[in-house]
Length: 439
View (tube, rainbow, N blue to C red):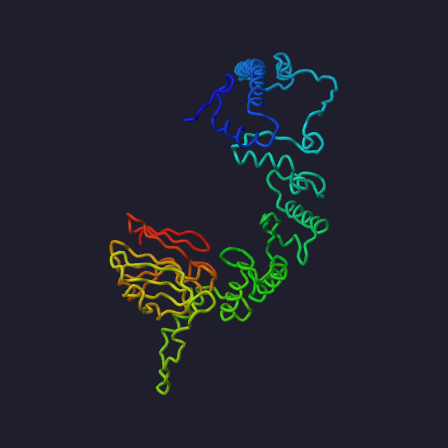
C-alpha cells in the first residue's frame, strides 16, 4: 500500500517526498517549504481548469460515440463527419499566427533544437524513449528522410535501405570521429568504463568468409583469419592488462591449431569425437619392446599465483559420503577422491582429451552422476555433450545431448538436477540452455 504524507492540503507519496527533499532540492537555493508552497499554488490554480477540461473531454467523447451509433448503418461521409466535429467543438477554425516566448526557460529547451517528450521517470522504457526523442537517432533520421537515396515505400522494415543507412552512418563516423588503427565498420559494442568511452567490435567483419555454418547460417572463418583479427584487436588494446583476454586467447589458439581441417577451419566437436570412436574400434597392436616410466614432474610446485600446472573447473562432493569428491578439469577429464582430496584417481581416461565444467550427483542415488563436458572458461577442449554414469563413475553412457547436436565447438558449464524430481535435469552452455524431463 502506498504511504502518503500531507503537504499543505495535498496527499503525496512518501517516496516522492523523499525524492524531492533528499535528492532534488539539496545543493539548490530552493527550500522544501518554498517548493511545496509553489506546488500547492499550482495545484489549487490548475485543478479547476483541469476538471473543466476533463468534463469537456467526456462530453466530446459522448457526442462522438452517439454520432457513430446513429450512423452505424451507412457509409462514412468524411465531409459530413468533419462538419459534425466542428459543430461540437472537437475541431476549431484555424487561428491567427502566434509566437511563444522562451524567457525563463532552460537553455537546453529554449536554445537547443530537438523535440520534447515528457514522461513519468519511474518507467525506464518511457525515460529511454524520451532521451531518444530529445537527442534523436542518426540511423532513424537517415532511414526516414531522403538523405539516403531511393524511395522508402516498404510497409515493413526495408532491409536493403537499412543496410545503406548503416553503411552511410559508419562512413560518416569514420570521417568525423576516426578510430586509430580501426574503423567504425567493425564496432559492435560501446560502453562507458571509468568515465571513458570503450569501443569493441567484430574484427572479422572485413574478412572474407568462404564457408557458412550449415546449422546456424553464420559465416565461418579459418583459425588463421581469427588469429589475424585478434592481432588487430590487441594492436589497440593492451595485452598485458589484467583481464585483457590475451592469455586465454593464446591458450585457445594453441590448443585448436591441432584440430583443423586441410583448409584451416576448426573441426566440429562431432567430427573429433567420431574420430575417437573410430580409433577405439580398431585393433591395437601393442609394442612389446616399449618400456615407459614416469619421470615427473610429480610436484610442479608454485607457478606464479597457482599451485601446479593445471586448472579445475568444477568440484562436487557426494551428498551421502563427504569423503568422496569429484573434480572436473578443463582438458583432463574427471577425477575422483575417496579420502576428501588427499589422493585422486582419473575416472575418464578411456575418453579423449575432454573438459568437464559441470558435475551433478543424484541425491536419491549417488551412483548416478551427470557431467557437462567442454571447457567453459577458455574453450581449451570441446564438448561431447552430457555424459551419465549409473555406477559412481566406473562406466559412462552418452545422453541425448551429444557432440552430434551440440553445434560447432561449443561448451557446456553448469548442470543441475531438479531438487524434487530427479528425472528433470538442467544444463547451460555457450549455445543455450537445455532441459531434460526423462533423465
